[in-house]
Length: 327
Image 1 (tube, rainbow, N blue to C red):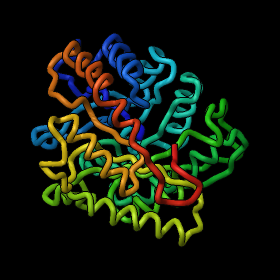
Image 2 (cartoon, rainbow, N blue to C red):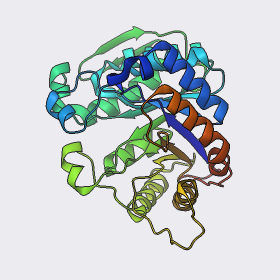
Image 3 (cartoon, helix red, strand yellow):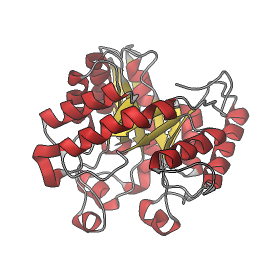
């Protein structure tokens, strides 16, 4: 099993602790030393106050934030979770991704989604009703741009006539693309156009607000992975599909007498059950609440000593496509 750790750059209430060049560098280095496979950041360029007042959060620009993580580290991967593709012209996103991939030596994972905050779409001048079509269009356009060859392509809001973008990403043919979202369309998008699928736990009471299907139990996740496997067979996909799941947030049957004596034991059992239904990558924040960078760093060190080795020892096999486990 592989693991991506969230950087708490949404903590704008404590800029000096979590949202500074020094903080990002130090936290990313700690994650790399602790054995995490990736770090991730979120995206919300201009959320409305009502959403913020009911549990929303701010975020740094993901590519700027991850560039500071890249400069401080050498091996850990750099994940957007999630970059909202409809917010930008796809060629600008392609350039940002390629630039970060080149400067990091080929370490980018592009977690991408359609977005769901209608007020944020309006503020950015993007038609919310077009978000799914714009997302599909963006993936096709970015892949074409990353080829480094002259491109002629017309989209809903762009026209490229023999344009070319260099340098190409280091990763070939391009950095892995993981699609977020729980809807069947998101799963089909992942199978048909991408390299991974990143579902999110989503209680039924927040499904309408997030414009995403509810995902509450391990069985819910299994049903969707089964759907992805079936769709892969239908469209003839043979490449394995990374399934990146949150470590936590889903209801599952973990017996109280199953040997789980502390939080780490419970998380290992959770990860094992996730692996059993086809999850190959985990993502999440630090386990214990932290209110300072020093606390965050101590928790990362602790997880690296007591939890990460146990999680990475869990065997995973992709259930979507053929050819073994996805990376």
